[in-house]
Picture 1 (cartoon, rainbow, N blue to C red):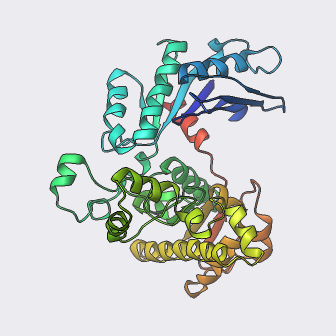
Picture 2: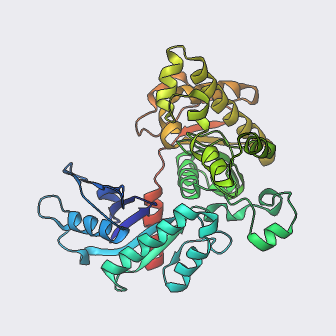
Length: 399
């Protein structure tokens, strides 16, 4: 069975074609700058690469580029689209409507559309991606939607209800939802496999650290709490997002600078975080390089990030009543050994011990344990694979 995984953004459409017989990636790529000037890149599992600038006015035209690449004579990996058994879509916001992956029908699409106010850029783009696939495949190829929020749906009320008047939860569904759930789900299950244990027997903290970051507490196989909230703005400091802050900071700056709600939203989501503190870049690699060259604001940005990670791990250890394993994943978590080292050495008070040599080696897609055998807590680096989770869910539902 070959499954096409689609991750549609507001102006992009990423994809992977996965052969589920051995879970190998036959091809992957990205349609970028849809509706602007357009760029398309396609690469195959055997190393062939096709890249071009091409105008794509909407997601349907972008999907035509994907289709043509998959079946092209020079860069294709299948003879025709008939070889695609199903399509799996990543959906950011499932709200309280969807607590698990489901087959696509018109009712499901309308449900995703109804949640657009909670994720205006993401969910609107996802719907476009679904309809683009329907336009090309029709209803002969089943489609499945996998929700980022679903894994977090096990959170108790005390963790997801905000202490604002309860009527806003009832009227507008204002609550903590959490994100990156597909990633947290993958790495937590993979960590349990590597430990040779059942996830239901473990207390685990998973750290998805990238341009967007979130930390999740998992007990008995269920999410107890997670750092992102109503939107992906909450939690630890990120590339351009503030993370958690005193809400009065928002109203104070808005009043002082005479900013509208939209302008404040832009500042909090796109001008803050690493970029806002360092004044250099939103990319951790650039900021780290600047800090190593002696830039004090870049060093401050790194100090804030590592302090935030440490705070969440500490608080979640208390919530869980102890922790058996900590996992680092995503771009920063998988590749920046210095951040892992700083955080883990600060956790020595609770018995965390890491092998510094192993930690330095565990980068660029490597998977494994970086804690010592006598460490009270197992620490792992596990490259995330959200696309594989989507493909597995899709295959299970279609079968």
